[in-house]
Image (cartoon, rainbow, N blue to C red; front, top):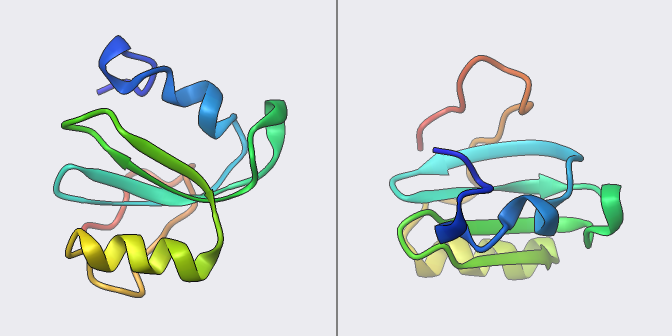
Length: 88
């Protein structure tokens, strides 16, 4: 899976390249990004089935979004450079 595929609506530019932490659960990829390449810093939630993405979320709003899609909170996040994200 590549985030720049058309079905993801160009998620790479929306997230920028400054991913600080990342995790996954079922069809969701989530985490925290910085402000590289003009992206809005904050937390994000990407639905890989629908391609919808929410970026620039405050931590409280992000946790509420995760709860709404039944992702255990607080989620386990890892450095994006690690070999594999932790499954929830």
